[in-house]
Image (tube, rainbow, N blue to C red):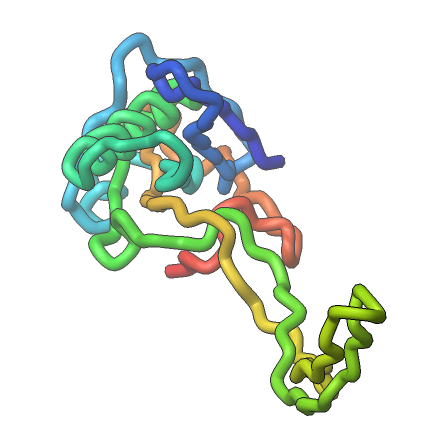
Length: 191
């Protein structure tokens, strides 16, 4: 089950920031009243301290439209989105992998039909006025071959991390969820 959270930009635009939480265990946890905190500890260290990985979280920040925030402000917004989103799903900690932090991605992909081969030819254009006009020739071109080129209409910054929960029950009674192929919310960030 993938949960999508839409958070308003906080400015007078129609742009949206997105937070996606993808649970990795079947148990759902109560939301936390305070945002989660960032950790740099590895998984084995967190498990030894009684933490359980409960999911993955991604935050997307649009880089198009009237969004004029600097890169530093966008990074701060992504961090805030991750921590608040994790707390909404019961997370206490978020571990962000450095290689998945603030990655620029294509947010609006499309395919452009581009001409790759043309042919030039002359066209006779008769005079518009038969008495005083002068006929002329113009060069025109037509496309002989096209190619579909993947293109990006808009970019976003994306940050991905794992969400950890600390509780007295531990992780032993929480079986992992089976991930559906192709349905991963944070696709492309596998660890």
